[in-house]
Length: 87
Image 1: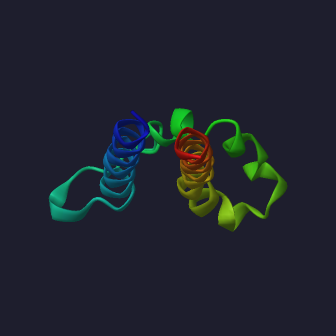
Image 2: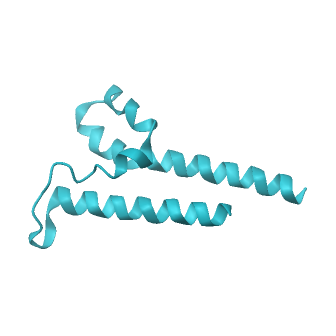
């Protein structure tokens, strides 16, 4: 079950990151959109609330990286559950 949850989270994160990058930089003639990163917000919650504590130029990068903290937490929980199950 953990493997499914991890895979689903990674796939959603990659999809949201691709949408954000395409909407922000507008390659291939895609029109830029200021709300392109909106799908990263729920994946990075609550860590994205701390982004404004850093300097303004880092905000987009930290907002894009915030879901990685949730991914790490999910991975650690799965690892603990697997260790308890096996041992």
